[in-house]
Length: 123
Image (tube, rainbow, N blue to C red; front, side):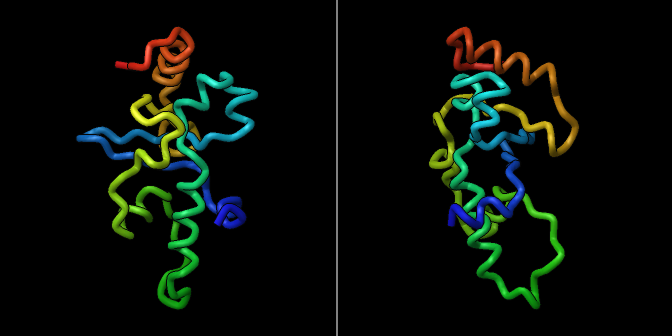
């Protein structure tokens, strides 16, 4: 499944109550360019992308083609309800992604600052 992960978009959408948070996948680029281990702790594992890719690739291509998909949506449709298994550190606030939706740079800065100072909450 990991090979397939490279061919699928790396952003996910998490619905929490009425808010939608778009989160980042843990990669070397996140660690090296966006804040080191503190930034990685606020990410999802790449396995979420691989699992979503498996569900996409096992569908009938004649009936399912030409779609823009978000991995968490694919997994929810497949019946997955426990997304903590995909968190690098379950319970930590997710870093907002800036490739889907409107970027919330203030929230990203707040999360990075809170994580680097040891505060696990980002209100």
